[in-house]
Image (cartoon, rainbow, N blue to C red; front, side, top):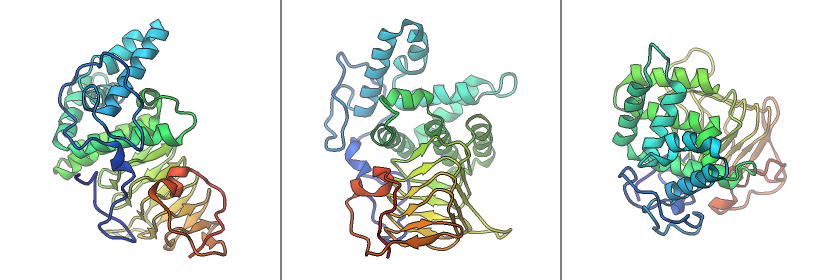
Length: 320
């Protein structure tokens, strides 16, 4: 299967976490699809079998939308316009984001929808990443009972998908359009991600308010980031100046990671920490300036046991 976004890993270069790919069918995801006749069984970490349209995540999200619309008649048009009438997750994302980010009289919704749809169609890896992000929210956030609620209401998810479209435009040399999406997403969602930043799959922005990610930052797969986190630079230097975050990392609320530092796979950054130096793989770092804590060698963890997936924010008692 093709890589989700970028084959980067700070401690095992070129090797990708397998956790996210177990969820995704190895097939195109932008073809028109019909609503399944019956609600599919939930997609799970242990299965990527093909049911209904052949896109488990989209099938399940639509079934959830139909159930909500049946239970709450006042929501029927809302769910119909944004989910049930759309042929694919990519089409639904373009419609939903354009409704959120348009500027009446200056940036028409239809034109913005076409811009978003074109970017997602040209970069199918963005759609695969979005599916992994939906599953990450459902599996890690106990407040997320259904993927359709994440899709419709969670600004962290929506800000991340706006970034994925902006990054696609940036990669295609369309800097002005990419910066427009960045600006509107920052204004609407309170999340500011430079379109040049490279972000992997299976990402959870929990609460998300105040997240800032700089231009040369790289975030691996299966990473969870809480509100108020900054992945920023220091001073006025140009070039590669932002953090590199490995797979399975958990970054607590209000933490700042500054400069071209590496956060190793499976590390935990405590809430409010200020990280100015590299954090080894599997380490818990806390404080200002952040320091590693613990007494034992960090164990090897399976992908599903990484802090970014388990969301366990306590002291691990491990250090490199």
